[in-house]
Structure formats: structure tokens, C-alpha cells
Image 1 (tube, rainbow, N blue to C red):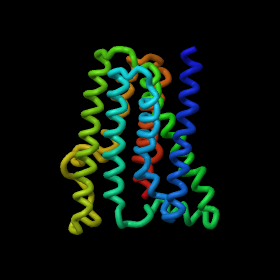
Image 2: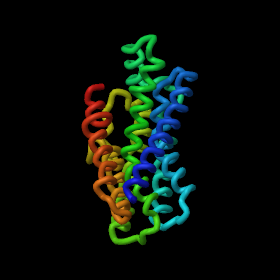
Image 3: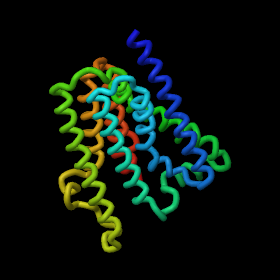
Length: 237
């Protein structure tokens, strides 16, 4: 019975994620800017988390904690990306897509950019969905460890993003490599922090049960940042 209900929640979450990204896609057509999807990425997770939180008949401590953490993470990330990209036009990565897809960009982007991100957000949200399904279980040691790991990752990521943003705003740094602050110790401290955030949420989700479902969340975000859209893509730019 548990798995049947959880499967229903996942299917509904898929619909929420797809509907949210469809709205963002329509906005991108109006603005002629696909890169707005980056700023809305974190808000899509919030849409899923807040939907199930609002429908919960029993709001447990773990449920409240995870939704709160996802909202803090999503709002900060959206604000950072919006500030970083403000007034700069479409991101070069999406400009390249537009060049490759030509007049078919409007519909190809829906599937290859927006619905793809909706699917990725759904899988990464599995830890959150599991928690919202089993919200009534009491907190334990793994929740505390997960919270501390999340807090460490969120602060690490926030500081790294802030340092890089200030560095790029200084015209004197044009063409130079950021090697100060956290960037002195890691080439991608923001990605390291992001990975810690989602492994922290996974540890919190452990108390809700069915770890083999929620572990897909940190595994996917770790793979994406290390092998697909993060480190690897930056090396090719």
C-alpha cells in the first residue's frame, strides 16, 4: 500500500514539475531567452515541496524541516542566478542551442531544455517526496547530521557564489582566474556546496524510510554537476 501511494505522489509530482516548467517555457518564448530556466530551477523544487506540505494532514518535524530547507535553498539560488544574469541577455550556452536548432528552437527547447529539467528536478526531489509521504516519523541522529551537512553545504555554496560574483563585477579581473577565498582551495566550491546540500537532505530523508528511493536524489545531482552540466561543461566553454 505504501509503494502504491508513494508512486501516486511521484506521478503527481511529475505533473507539477512539468506544468511549472511549461509555464517557464512559455515565458521564455515571450522573452526570447531560454536561459531564464536557470533562475527558475530552484523554484520548481519549491513548487513540489510546498504542494505536498500544504496537503499534509499531519505536519511532522521532518516534513517542516525539509520544506523549509528546500525553500531557503531555492530562493537563494534563484536570486543569485537572477542577479548574476541581469542585463546580460541570453546565456551563451543557450545562444549556441538557438543557433543549432534554428527556426525549430521554440518547440525543441520545450523538450530538450524545459521538460528535461522538469524530469531531472523530479528525480532530485525524490528525497523530499519520501519525507512528505512519511512526515510523522520522529527525528533522529541522521536528521541532525543531515541538517549540519546541509547547513555546511548551503553556507559553502552561498559564500562561493558571492565571492565569484564580486570578482566578476570588477573590470580589472577580466580574463583572470578566480583563486581567492574558497576558490583558492577548490576549482568548483559552489558545486561542492550544492552536492553537500542534497546529501544532507538525503540523510534527513533516511528517517522517513525507503532509502533506496531517496538516494537517487543526491546521486543524480552529484553526477550532473561532476559529469554533465557542471564541471565538464565549464571545461568545454
